[in-house]
Image (cartoon, rainbow, N blue to C red; front, side, top):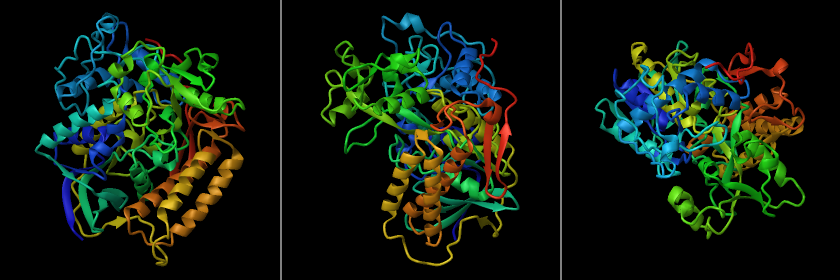
Length: 567
């Protein structure tokens, strides 16, 4: 088997992985392993913006308070404070490597002009620039759900992720210490004596290779493809989280899957995200009778937190006289949609829709995997040598429900921290001949499953029905039974294709997500139990942790963290 050696191995090429790679490269050689091109990452597809308290009258304390409120009591205050304080500098660093942000329209520029922030120049572990680049004085700041004021920076209206990815990829590709391994699927992590020493990868030819490193940073994204309806890229199959679990890392908060309220809902179309910034700019949610229903549900109407809006849409669609929900922009001045959100206009035009004339049919879809590998503020997992960041990790930043536009920010800040520590605290590189990949070995070779895509579609549909936005004991029990049957069947089959490896990872995570949802007998944030509709801080203020050998444990928090803090 071919063997490769590197200082820091980064798995994933989204915002978190590339931020980690750039930070690590200040101290060591870095190899970035990519399953798919960066343009096909969830980062590149992200339409929302990046949150930072840089506007006049805003503060990082206010940003933190909004994050805590949205997290429904389960946020880690220390992590929230670290990320929100680092946000202004992180945005300046991103601008410093060439990222371009939208400018405010002249009539509103004075309302949201950037102002100095008390924490903007804090020294940040993993910083990759001196952050001397100033953001434009007329940078546009939008408002999205859960935020008390406008603090969201966008690029080309609804292409912030693509612009962030472009800037980071360009900067990483120019770095002499960063190399890329394209089209490489991580089958499993390699471990020796309870230490992660690298990864087993598979190339399209089927060839396996071992990559050994001093430290491994997992930034392999989320698992939105557990669900039939999702805004995620096709490669978001939870490979990194599943591999970490098999290798002995602890996972947490797996029951919390965020569903975005608005994805384009047309027969035959991809479930394309319609960014929250559209509602922030004044878009209304209406039903097929033209009724605007969110005003009766939450004081912030369409700008309520995402869990509130998603659940409200599902509830409204259940009414006997409602056939659909739409995003209505017809009250906007002519030309505003094309000027503010050109990507939305282009997407709608492919299906014969004109947002100035036609309401846009929308429904919720799985969007963000809040749970993941349990890590600290520097990305350390409890498996020696393994770090994680971005959507593959669970830091406590998001609690039970992620605040809009905190995900790209998390990747920038905590990705850089993880890369810095992975490079500076890593042990000597392991380059021996004995390593173990904890891949389940097939008992017999029965050949390939007759139709892997059909089994995957069955899993996605079942998860959407039984473990989706609304859950109950009956549905979760039925899901657990079916997943166990599928896992038993597929465990006897030798895995030979990327699609079969992905399905095994999805089945493993589906089992864990379902079990976590069954154990949390309350409703909190993105987790809605129709049979336990109230939040229960007495029994469930805390997180469920999962380990492949030690099983499940529940760890309580001392007190709710969604109460406003001082300052």
